[in-house]
Picture 1 (cartoon, rainbow, N blue to C red):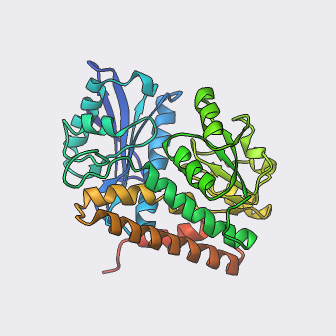
Picture 2 (spheres, rainbow, N blue to C red):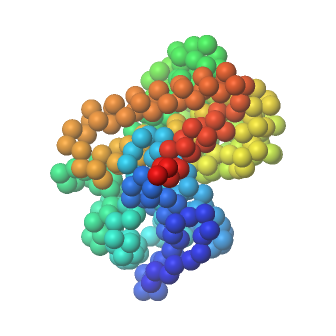
Length: 347
């Protein structure tokens, strides 16, 4: 069953339930002004329906800005399933696929936290509006490596702005979260000669990643306070807040997590401490670029994606330069620049 709910600042919000499979989730469409809403499906053990709704609304808004920042003809949407990803079933995924199909192309889904390309294939049994598939004429596969590449590119841009160099050799980077994107980012950083400090809730994954990347482990609740030149939040959102910001010891924030700032005021808290924050929806836009190539049926996907990644880096450079010139927060400046692309055209 799919039921429409009220969401004043979004075009659509839907509650999705299926008693037979145990599915309970939400789909949010923030904006379709630039094109059909696109954004991943994540599965998390939310504390409440209110928490799930808040997350899907924040994430879908972020996707509007992320797609606009990447200059894609796509709007912003997101979907969430409530529950431990280890409990998902094919029936649950197919039920979500049927719900997505009822939206008739206004929302395209793809892989996100707690999901895999195999899960996307299961969903695709019930809907045409799914990307991130492993097979098919325009299949883009797992977007995580491309997301990581975009974050890596942005981190180097930020390093140049904050420290006057883009050589990562010997640079200490604290990475919070070793999921699909976080792990690939660690691989790129390790290959570039960075010294890594890692944290994750999965002890086995943390131990293996430390071995793979010759890294040091840190407490997942204190990784933000580790002494490092760069802090890379790559897990859940809201980790930059009034509690954690005073404890930060890094001069640069560049990560893959969505909605890293708990509130808009946290951008000012970072600026007041002289910490350079790279707007998350610009830094982590590589994955949606990769997915967009599949949605838009781009035949020459690899060069198209590479060109879009380069353009995203140019956008980040421009935002940081303007922010420095105006002595303003890059987060606020990005919202202004990218937000203008989402406004209705006059006339």
